[in-house]
Each structure stands twice: as C-alpha cells, then as structure tokens.
Length: 320
Image 1 (tube, rainbow, N blue to C red):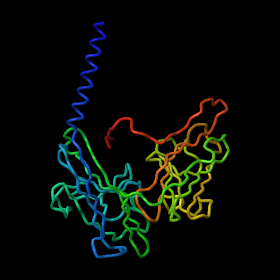
Image 2: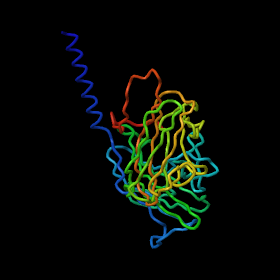
Image 3: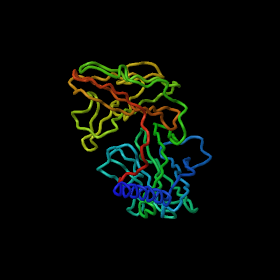
Image 4: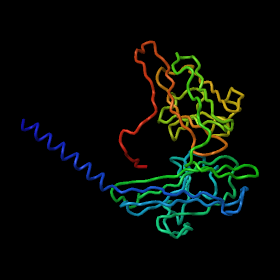
C-alpha cells in the first residue's frame, strides 16, 4: 500500500509539472499574412516584377522572434530563384538570407516594416525559371527559446509563366476541393494494378502532388515513383514537373476535373504503400489533402486494416 501511495504521489507531481510547463510555454501566432505586388496599383505581374511578402505576429512570452523565408519543396540548386541566395544541400531547400544569416530580424537590412513583431520584405522575380515555386514564411523563437520552441508559418506560391506572374496565397482554402480521392481498389495482390482516382469539384485542376510521407528504401517505392537518394523519399510526377499534371503523360483520363493514375505492383513486396495526395488548382489557395495507403496482400495476410485521416496525439516540435 505504501509503494502504491508513493506511485500515486509521483504521478500527481508529474502531472502538475506538465501543467505548469504548459502554462509557462510561450506562443507565436501569425495574425496577418502579407502577399502583394510591389506596385499595389498593378492588376497583373510580369516576370522580373517584385512582390512584398511578410507577416504580423502575436508573441506571448516566447522570447525574440526571427523569421525565415524558404522553399518548402526540395529542388536542385540550378533551379533555385536568384533572390534565395542560401542553399542547403542536405534538404535541397533555398533560403533568403541577410548578412549571411537565414534568421531574418525585425528592423534588419531586409525588413521594410518598422512596427514591432512585423516583418515585410520585397523579393524580385528577376531570373526565375518558368514554373511553380512553393514557399513559406516562418516566425519562430529558435534563438531564444523562452518556454520552449514555438513557431508558426504562412505558405504561398509564386507561379512564373512566359509573360505573367501569379502570387498564390496558400493560407485561404482553395475553392477547388476533392469530390472523390481514393484508390480503386485499395487492396490488391502482387502484380495487380490499382488506380488513384481523383474527381474535383471544379474543372480548373492543374495537377496532383503525390508524395510518400515517410522515409523509405529505394526498393520499397512503387514502380513509376521517382526516388530521391538524399531525402530517402519518393514521389510520382510528370517529367519536368513536381506534379502529376492534368491531361499529361501520367493522367489516363481526359476530363478537366478528373485525374486517373495507374499504379503498378509488379515485383513489389506485400505491405502498405503510403501516399499523400494534394490537389493543386489554377484558382490557388490551400490545397485539399488526402492520405491514402495501398495494401499489397500476402497469402498469409489475416489482418484487415483501414487507414483514417491523421489526428494529433500530442503537440510537439521538430529539432529541424
């Protein structure tokens, strides 16, 4: 009984420590996201024009706030926009830097907003190759972790065409959503073919981002997926694009609001093959996202599994 009582006491103390720690933890929240042409009277942008991007944050007991602007998709150094002058080869991300530092500071050399807890800078599209660039602004306290590390981010895209530039605010929901996004069938025998079937609510589909959300060995990727040795990840796309483009080589359906992708399981091992699918639409906005898993059956399989949408078990943070 005494040992049990001590155990209960330790449990209560542990819970109190966790509650006190949560109460003391600081927070950083992006209150306003700024994304606009440098010429505010402009109704359209052309390659070479500049744009303003920034955030206003609310900081509560988190310490000094610094900002990072970087790409969110891995890319080769040769394809990086010239304005993002710091390249991290390990993750293939490109950063904006000031004075050889990717931690951008309020009222520093690149900050055009004098207000406290506000950062805004101007970026030129001069020299950007045609294509879509997915980027984000991060506000965090990595240099002064009062109450623990905390961060918030705002995502956006810059689309460079031959004679036009589009700024896409990824913080607002896209008007184009999934009507259907599923594997047909979701369970196959080795050697059988499944179809990733997507139908959108609007006919302005640009394409799908299809990525494996886990680290994996090359032999564990499905046939047709491109494998990145450095990142130990795999993705499916058309040649020359990060997306499965609507009505291009990988898409076997000619509809403007439907994409069908045939997935081969020739010579693959039985198991679960996970993928995250995002719907990229011409109208822009935060893309609809689905998490799917294709099960390749083994003759010994007796366990039936259903993959749900993910949910948060416990708030945490990444050392990266």
